[in-house]
Image (cartoon, rainbow, N blue to C red; front, side, top):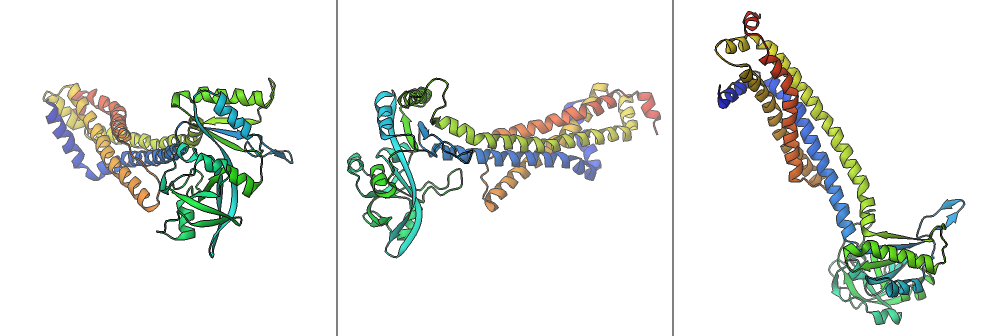
Length: 406
């Protein structure tokens, strides 16, 4: 019996009980749709995190100061100012493959323009910082090394802060803003970056020279963070090790003592940030995969029932010359058709669900071609796996007993 003839017989058998066929396919449809939708949500979240990590800059290493303990509780790295400008200069001078470096002086302050007044984040940095952290300048220009050296009262302003202070379409360059009643001239408007991984608006910020921030705003003498940029991505590990060894030496940390600083590469930050997303993607995909298993069991159940119902039909086919292999192929094709068609419908439903969630709930979703192909072949494999036993049972029936079956 030729393959296409067997295929026609299988399709005719499935159409004979259309409602039962659709209900049998339902488990596969729901399973595949759930897998596609859940994996799309997980991939979208992972891609969003990776984009936000990339927006931090290329080949960036974060150096954080030590921690403070209050009431027996550790406040975490970065809570104590154990880093000095001499440490930064030593890193620039003595650690090979360092392209640029900048201290970070963070503060929250009231900013006023005319009758507008708001609280925002102030970040004191060196001149290379915007380029290191992939900040574009939408208007104006960044402040210079000389302005940092002179503690000039100049500022770069984020898009959100600019909109709140000056209005939607106003260019703030050249305007005067008052930070803690200290006048600063806006020399540049930062390009928009959007939300970070913590859900904070990165555009609600004002950057000033770190010298001005320490002298005029915070009065501090130490730093909680450095940003260091390596020349190339493959040099990150060497630069990280060089910074650690240099700071241990400068801070006179003996062997066996804990560091009073922490050095983290962009890769480590990315791995940490995406670990939870990967775990959730696997978990959600596994839970959705249970539906495929249930659907496969449903296919086996229905195919066993079908074998019982069609025992006489099988006997007649064998009596007129059909071989056991032909019967096996017929029932196996029926099982694969059930799972394959269910898989196609499930893929369409899963992709549609992810699009609807992205449009209505604003969840980041990313449906990859690989996940679609994998879901389809997995659904077909479910049909083969769970359809083989009923097909083998049908092929092993005795023709004489089958013809006598009532």
